[in-house]
Length: 216
Image (tube, rainbow, N blue to C red; front, side):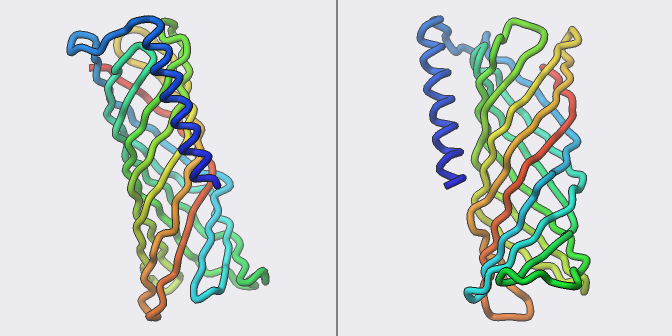
């Protein structure tokens, strides 16, 4: 349901941007397209982990951890940005339950999600110094869990995000940005080193970041 909601949101944003571009008769040309790069220092909050191994469901809460994102994009229209983004989020397991029963001793499990997204954003009030963008993207992610014994379990799959971005132009080509988003994954097939069973793992949660953007 969360995945479908993200798809509907992106579709609505795309339709709105197309309708606006038709109304204002903007055209895309090499002269109007501007490139940009941005970097952000990020963290997660309310990041949740759900696992299903041989029908046994376990859930976990993950403590916030530092991460980063870097993106290269194009301002296709005054209201529309398209970008390619790479992001990394990490955290330690704080609480775990198996089949609804809390685990008394939580191992020092470290979780990382490394993702590459294709994003599309719609900008509100593009001619002002302070702008707000709303959008999201789809991509490919690799999930890694390193347990207290040093064993790494990895899985890959589809990831998605919905993100709101606030930007402030300090003049020239430099902008300060802050962003809040929701990130999630479909089931990631994780191979367990000590077992022949494939564990389906999914992550979802909210993200926050601060960074800078430079136009080319």
